[in-house]
Image (cartoon, rainbow, N blue to C red; front, side, top):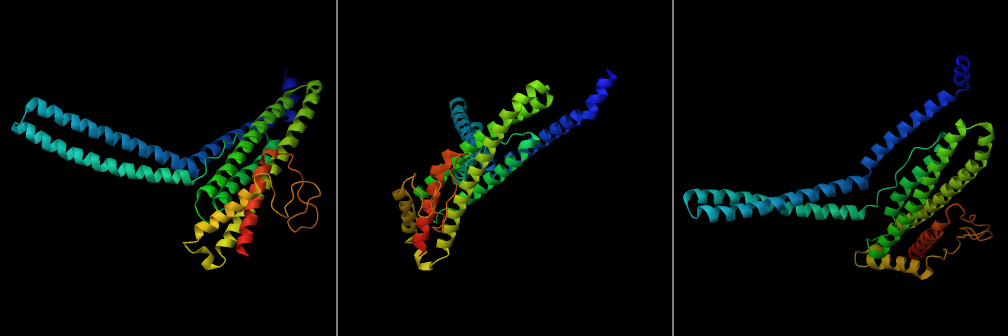
Length: 317
């Protein structure tokens, strides 16, 4: 028994399991802190707090009115009843004033929540072999949310719709990749404890899942690159001719860019930006990007962003 224990410790299995467990605990704690500090989560918590304040002051107003009615019904117009009514009137004025403030604060908080992208998907701890791709996905996810907020010149419905579609598609892909990484991590940990005859069968499955995750993260990176092109085109258009961005004409500029996007349709790529083998690259020379095999559901969103960037480039000429 002692010999078996020595062999187990000398093989490094216990040390490896301990390090993996420590990494999981650290990643879980870091995710809890990140989720709590995420702007969308903070804005939603503040909106819920504003809703609670509004309900509390509204309920206090109703109780005060009911108390005043009860005083009148019981005490009539006696001196004590009049004093109580004066006190309840002061309380009711305070409740109504605070309720109006809470309603105004709630409207402001609601606008902030609507302006921010939804919270990013939960980031689960994964095995050491998958931390590299997941770290890249973390960076892509954070960067995409910042870039999407920079797309467009005006806050019209068409621009907000494009932003929402891009974020929704990206979040769906991110959830799928993180779920797949969690499944692959379970198999990797099982492989470490499995016998040689069983572990050999798991190796092929693990390798296939890792390729799927790598391809998916690469596809997500393509979406981030397209969002960067659209954000850059928006910034260049905003820094162009000042007369082009006159307050009276800015909505027309935003509508024209969105119109260029709608005219191409979600499945049409921007000129000079290929989506398949043999297509021209951004300069019109040479092969374009490889087919989007890891995250094909993002192809339409990438084409949308490319078309939007191309439309804004045309407007800036």
